[in-house]
Length: 155
Image (cartoon, rainbow, N blue to C red; front, side):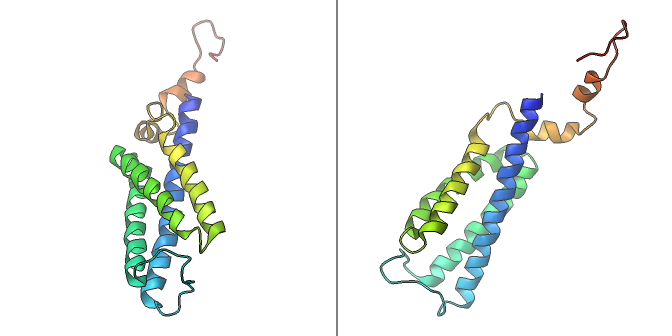
């Protein structure tokens, strides 16, 4: 059961990181919409069709990531599937940033890879909803401290 709870921790990590990434995207999208003339973009180093379109894409993907992160925290299976797709697309999109912001893009790709690992490894052994519903006073915790008829503690 301890291994199962460890993987729940990975899912919570993935959800929180997804929400952090989403807030960064939302912030960048809002800045891109408000200050589209003031963005530091070097010609030929960033693949962008239109700054406004780029900003809207960041804003909308950030909102989708944020909602998906909340779904993960609630233990929803749909959120896990959507998160895998969204994080995979986010990692691929970071390739466009490599010319303009190589360190940032590599950092985001590494973070996306870690989140993908957290979402996909041990898929069947981590039931987030069951563990959250069980709480700290689960039957497993009670059984570890139960005393059999002989009086010796169960380990």
